[in-house]
Image 1 (cartoon, rainbow, N blue to C red):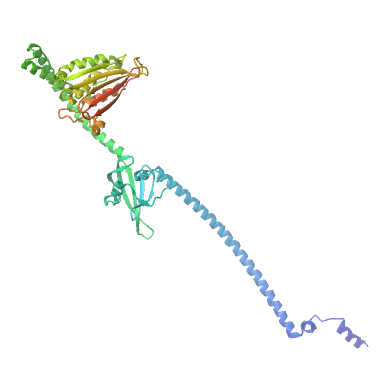
Image 2 (cartoon, rainbow, N blue to C red; image 1 turned 30 degrees about the vertical axis):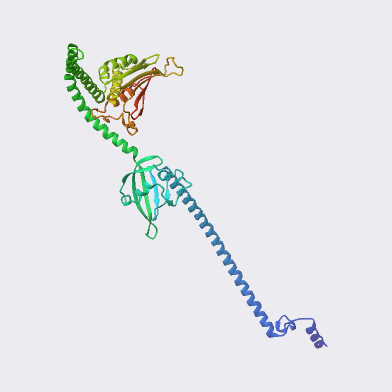
Amino acid sequence: MESAAGQAKGSTGIQSTTPLENPMLGGPAEANLLLEAFQTFTKASDSLESAFQQLQARAQRLSEELEARNRELKKSLREKAEAQKYLKTILERLPCGVLVLDTRGNATLCNPVAGELLGEPGVGTSRRFTVSRPLRNQSLREHLTSSVARVPGKETEVPIESGRGTSICALSGTPLTNASGKACGTLYIIRDITEIKALEEQSKRSERLSAMGEMAVELAHEIRNPLGGIELFASLLERELPPGSDTGRWAENILIGSRSLNNIVSNMLHFANPLAPTFGQVDLHQVVREIVGFMEPIMSQREVQVLERLDACDPNITGDRELLKQMILNLVHNAMQAMPSRGSLTVSSRDLSATPGVASSEGLEFSIQDTGLGIPPENIDRIFDPFFTTNRNGTGLGLSVVHQIVDRHSGVIAVTSEVNRGTAFTISFPRNREVSNAA
C-alpha cells in the first residue's frame, strides 16, 4: 500500500525541477536547445549592454570634444573677425592709398584714399572694400600698368588727374602670389606728395632768395649812391634848360629813368632786407597825392589820365608811412608798365561800412585800377611770387613787396583782371585792429 501510494504521490504531488523530467518541453533535446538559446541570449544581451555603455561613453567623449572644438572655432572666428575689422580700420585710416589689381587689371581692393583717386569717394569704406571692376581713372590706370610702377620697392613720382584736380603721387607696386605660388595680382601703395613737393620747392626757393637777397643788398647800396647824384643833377638841368626844348626833354627822360631805377633799387632793398615798420596814424589820401605828383612826369609822357575817387570819409589808418608810400608807388608803377601808351588810372577809396557815406571803424578799402593789357588767367596766382614777371624790363619784385607790406599791416589784397581790358588791385586795411610787426 505504501509503495502504491508513494508512486501515486510521485506522479501527481511532487514535480521534478529537471527539464528532462518536464513534460511541457516536449523532450530532453528540445529543453537543452532552449536552455542554450537562453544562455546565448543572456550573453548577447550582456555584450550589447556593455557595447552600449562603451558607445555611450564614447559618444559623451566625442560630444565633449566637439563642444571644445566648437568653442575653439568660435573663438578663432571671433579673433579672425576682430583682426579683419582691425585691418579694415587701418586701411580706412591710412593716409596713403592701398590698391590691389588682379592679373586682368581690375581693382579688387582699395581704401578711401585710393577710392578718391578712382573717382568714387564711396569706394573704400568699411562696407565697400572690394570693387572688382576696371579702373575708370585713365591717368591712374596708365601709370599703374606701366613697367616702372611694378618694380618692387621703387617709387615713381607721377601726376594723377582726379576729381580733386592734379596731384603729385608716389607709386610703388609689389607682386602678389597665391598659395601655389602663381601670380594673382599687384599691390600698389599710392602716396599723395603734392604738399611735400610744394614745401620742397618753397624751401629751395627760400634758399635761392636768401642767397640772391644778400647779393641784392650789396648791389642796391652800390647803385643807389651814384643814382641819387644822377637824379639830383637831372632835376637841376631840367630847371635850367628852356621848357619844351630837346635838351629839356632829354633831362626829363633822365629824371624819369633815374626815378624808375630808384624804385627798382628800393624794391630790392625792401625785399632782401625788410625794415622793421614804425606804426602811426597815416593819411592814405595824402600819400596817394604825393605818389601821383611824383609819377606825374611819366604819366604825362605816356598820356595816362589819373582819376581820383577818394570817397573814404576817414582816410587815416595805422601804418608805416614810408612802407605805404612804397606800396602805392609799386602799384602805380606796375599800372604804368601795363599801359605803354595812353590809358586811364583810377585811384579810389571807401569806408568799409554798412552805411554808405559814414566812416566806419572796421576798415578802409583802397584800390588802383588801370586800363592796360591785363593779366592772363594762368598767371593770376603767380603775380605775387618773387621774381615772376612777364615784363622783360621788370624784376618781378614790385608786387611781391606790395604783398609783403600789406601782410605787415594785417591787410588783405585781391586782384581782378581781364586781358586787354585792365587790372584792379583792391586792398582792405583795418583801422582799430592790432597790426603785425613781424618781418
